[in-house]
Image 1 (cartoon, rainbow, N blue to C red):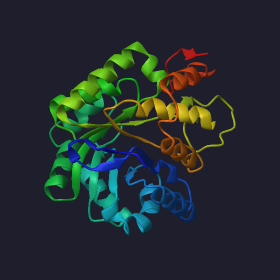
Image 2: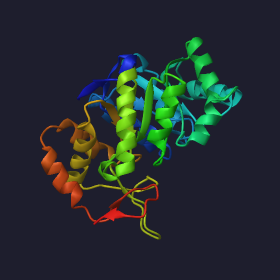
Image 3: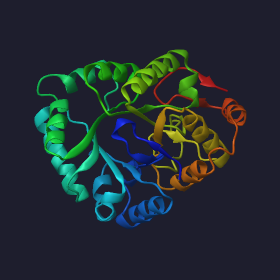
Image 4: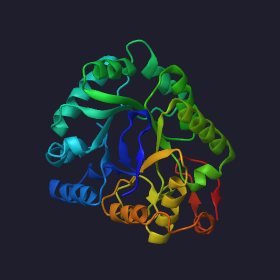
Length: 292
């Protein structure tokens, strides 16, 4: 399994993160099988959140046993110091661990949300306090939507976050404004040794109205192996990228792992040819156009 440094946290993490959103609505047996599959394939980077349904609970039984062998990250979506601190303690209890390697301020995709986190008695203060108490290692920030890179660049001006986590895929990077903002964020993150981790690598489009939804994702994901391979190749081709999160469905996870294990077998030109020819490929965050 390919590994890269998680910024100045200086941990060699698997480039594919086990995105525990996939465990939010499954039973414990299914969760155990998926976690074991990840561990068996050398994945040591696990990423969850307090609001991913029962994900933290599902992680607990196995993760607590291998805690010293993995990088464990969770998130709080609370915006006040008091509520965020309560959620941090709750996350530790649910996962049956004494600490996590990374606590992220969750869903901070706009300046308005950033302001809530960084104001007096905001959630950032809870994270800093938790770090001082040894409950967490690093402090990160996450965000969805087209404003995430601009927001996270501003966040790095306010506080030296250890990680950022935001959307990146071939389509979004083809949008000039998103590309410019993402590149600017990457430049500043590199300067600060902040780890850039991404989500939505294999997101294809919003679900069509009334369409069957065979996957537990809120967007339509790619599920053909060749296209997943191209998507994975695209995001991993960014040399400063620490890793990407797997899609939120246990059935897609093996395909993503397979792609990562074969990373390097596809050229940039081959990936470009595949992704540029996909019909209906668009952003899941509401942009009006698509690549046809």
